[in-house]
Image (tube, rainbow, N blue to C red; front, side, top):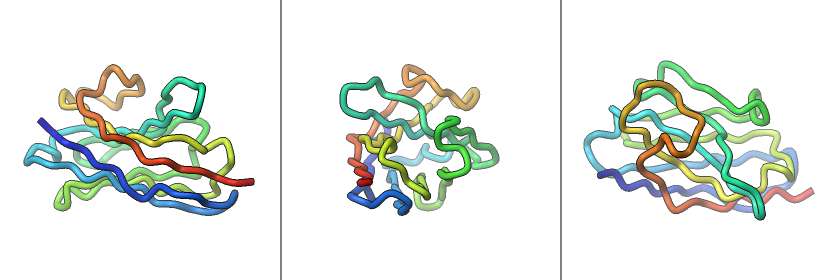
Length: 125
């Protein structure tokens, strides 16, 4: 079992930056692929970014490619999402998730086994 706790959300103006963190409990974090998802009001949860357990590869949604960067520090059991050039349409609750099978970088939320409680990101225009 893995517990995930996100932090770092908040209110920022368009064009600004935020860094989200997701701290994981347990000793198996380094075996899991990790993902970030987001859900805006009235919309379905959508994939944002994913990173391999080793950190050797990443994948991004088209909507954030070039603006967001996912990274991880396995020694600290933490995955990060650096968000730059934020837009009002990035406003959402952001969730981190863990994929214990780690067979590939997944973009479907059903592929992930463990979820955090989410952190709110609001981008004002």
